[in-house]
Image (spheres, rainbow, N blue to C red):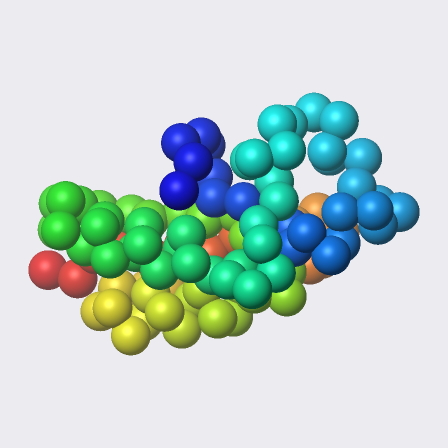
Length: 102
């Protein structure tokens, strides 16, 4: 997957949505993910981070509000602890935080 601050989290089908002012501030590759696999980057990062994070190391994602719960569930399934979903300023589930289990 591309190398940047966060995995792409907006589906290609939403590319022309009315509220995408964020797209003028970030490269397209950093924002848009193919509709067929919107969670692929998260799966790979969660898996790889499990191997390199120190005990109690944190993994923090910005994600699409439609997929925050699924990202949290993937982290729980991969034995992360204290997994929580955090709302953005508009009240949408946008961030997911979890810690590597000891």
